Length: 309
Image 1 (cartoon, rainbow, N blue to C red):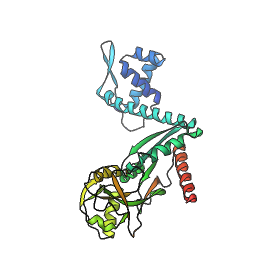
Image 2 (image 1 turned 180 degrees about the horizontal axis):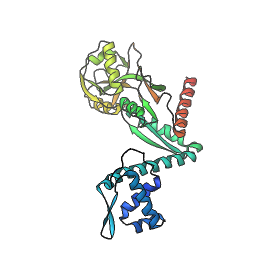
Image 3 (image 1 turned 60 degrees about the horizontal axis):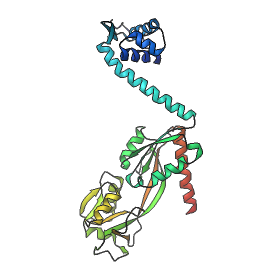
């Protein structure tokens, strides 16, 4: 069968695709028709109509059965993908109709231990949110923002990126930056120390691609610091582990997970430094009801905390 001249468009239906998949699976019209609960002649006509629309043969006779042609095998890949995506879309719509749905969120590593699990669990405890499910992604702020812009995430949690007109940033956490040293370090006995001490000892810092890594580069340039960076780590937990074993000192947010049994925290003398974490969303971007409800829930919590300060 040859493709006809001129393009008239293809008006295949989802039923035709499902019929095609059934025939491809069973390689037999009778068995496929039984599975589909339709007559064999109806199935044959549907496949013939599909072949006519596509302009190619999808099946060849093989003994008592049939088999996919080369074109049929290629079409099978696309047909499976289309039906799979349609099924996903149908399930999502049904979830929404029942008050459920899925929320895809991304967050930076420091939020993984407590903040995000606690936030999501408190959201799901509300009766109207019981049917909602979550998909989690953990990474650096730039990766989270990239996924937001590609539509792979609904909401992100991370650092602030200046001058990005596509994004809205909602402050959710404010933490003081502190210098941490290992137990027994020469600075151990001092409650507060100068930021310039970062120049005098090996520094355990953040990976340069991470938001905090970029912040450290800007801070050092602003304060004319030139520390000896011994190691770069993805998060505070990795930094804490190296500092506690005496590999250097570090400047990190004062998070609850820092174990003061293994390290000493020092406030920065004569300088107020804070680390802010934000909820990040695309501007003027449509959110499915479940994601929108979650975003509003986080926003309401931020406003409440601000009023209580």
